[in-house]
Length: 132
Image (cartoon, rainbow, N blue to C red; front, side, top):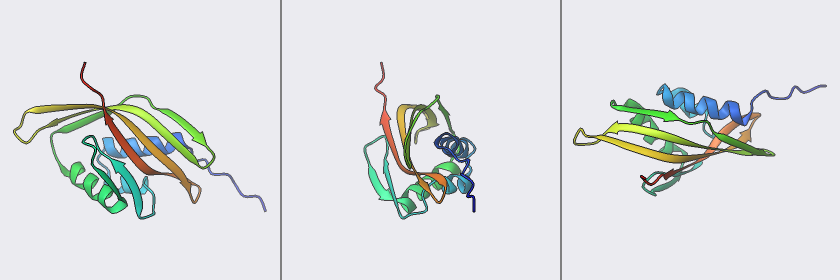
């Protein structure tokens, strides 16, 4: 019996993840994340969660909000066995609570593992870039 190798790659998984964010596609976003209960996330303020549910809930709320736009620069993607990571820069523009425009430029590291022949995110680390 010959088993076909998966055509899924870390690059394809990163593209699915980013595409889901850009399109505010919560269902696709949730499929790009591990099926396990643990997901490590550190946001731009240094707040940490280790819960997949918290991570997904936060993004569901964010996707439903108006007044934001995000752009990603080309990632550096590396793979070692069944683990991979993507490092990129994103530029987030949104309206603050007072309605004033806010900007966040940050490094973004997405850690992925292979689950059932599919690459899925297991960690998301956001590091703000200090203004020049």
